[in-house]
Length: 120
Image (cartoon, rainbow, N blue to C red; front, side, top):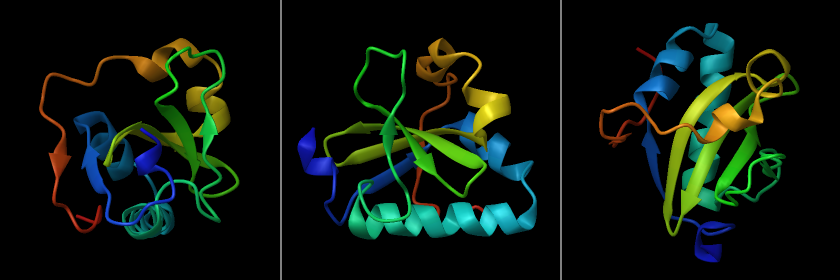
């Protein structure tokens, strides 16, 4: 699993939940999420700006919060060279209340990859 951290050329996948969350964000935040995804693909999740941190209270070490800005976070799961972006939202209102909900099984659809931008 350590190969995914700090390594360029990662595959980024999206859950339906992540894409639905992203569609509800203001345009300025969508641009910030796009910039963060570009950083993940080119430099890995442990690089300046993303400030990856384990999800406290979750025993599964694959889950990380990735910083979009001071207020918003993405939830990602890292496995080898694959990064699954699961959720994006306000880290206080959406994530800190219930750390157990972070590792919920993604919705029944397959993770999506190959998108170059979240903008519709």
